[in-house]
Image (tube, rainbow, N blue to C red; front, side, top):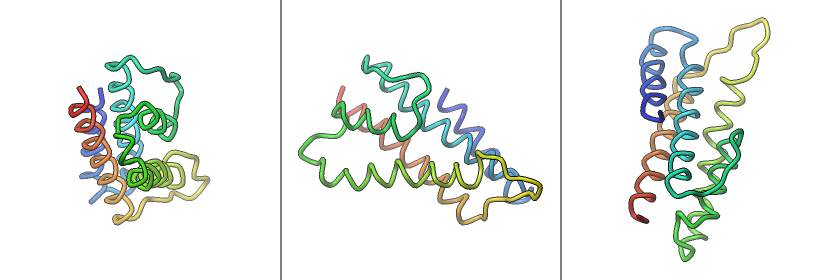
Length: 133
């Protein structure tokens, strides 16, 4: 599921380079991919979460469950903050809510940041999950 969602995000990202408006789709799919990754890890580890949990709540639960070793908690506190605030902010303010009568597109540099944040977050979560098995 997450791989398909990120593939959708990447396709929309590539199209956004020449077609205005597709950047919103890229960020929306990227957020979904991160959420699906977190849920898949939690399912495999039998950790509880609510179906409607947002990306921030899912990341909080992964950290609370010890996906990251406690001795690194201080260091990863900053990472958790960056992961849970950067990507959702781009998505919420620029892509996932109604825009009104005038079409607003995401600027290329913000779109690239969102895509890279999503990819880095997914990679980090998957690698942390593999290391803890």
